[in-house]
Image (cartoon, rainbow, N blue to C red):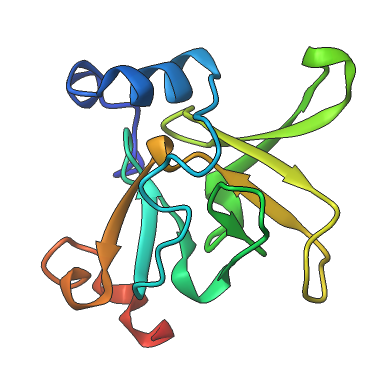
Length: 144
C-alpha cells in the first residue's frame, strides 16, 4: 500500500477554499493563492495526501495568477482527465492517491515539453528545502 492516500482527517481540516478546490473541482481566483508568486526553494505536495507533486525548480511565472510548473516531480502522482466544462476542452490534473483536483495542464509552457501545469495554491502544501528531511521528503534534497 502506498504511503500516500486520501486522508479523511486532513479533508476535515481543510479551509473552505481548500475544500472547494480539492474536493469540488473549484478554482481559486487568480493572484489570490498563497503560492502564485512564491520564489522559495522547496517541494509542493498534495494538501490531502502528501504526494510530492512539483518543485520550485520547475516553477515559473506564466503571468496567469496561479502557480505554474513545467512538469510534475513524479509523473505517476499526477493524473490527467478530460474536462469539458465551460464549453471548452481542457485537461484536468489530479493527484493520483489523494484524488485532489489540482488544476489544469495547457500546451503553452516553456521548456522542451511546452507544458504549463496551472495549479491552485489551495491544493498544495509547500515544504521548504531546509525542512524536507524532517518532513519525510529527504530523498528529494539531492534535486537542490
